[in-house]
Length: 197
Image (cartoon, rainbow, N blue to C red):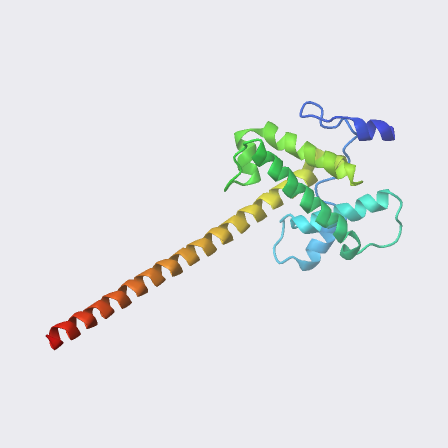
């Protein structure tokens, strides 16, 4: 496929392979090997970061980089992809899609076209910065990034709510302490008042 067609093609849910043939499998060999070195369980898929680092190294290899790459070499691209995924989630919220407290698979259960539409949007934005996620079979990388971004958003929201609840509880305890202090002051005042009169 020509460079211009790859850049300008507007992939959609009906034709997600419009930009080019998807050929990168869901778990690259490097991710499998690294996972097996660290694994304590068997038959479990490698973590999202392992799979995405392996993908980014593979993409650089496809572009012609022959030397051995480390995770540090692809860290800037990984961070860019995470940022783009968070940005796509913001687009989903702006489109009034309820993502609060949901997982990526729950969103897909409600409407698979939403998953596909926003995964394609992430692939387009990644391509705009030179990262060829559109080569991944079944949009696995884009979906994985959005899933991880949604998990992180949920975790941040939970921590934030816990912190707010903690502050609220502290404020409530302060109010109760102040009420108790006021009561004892009033009680002491009444005792003195009655004692002196």
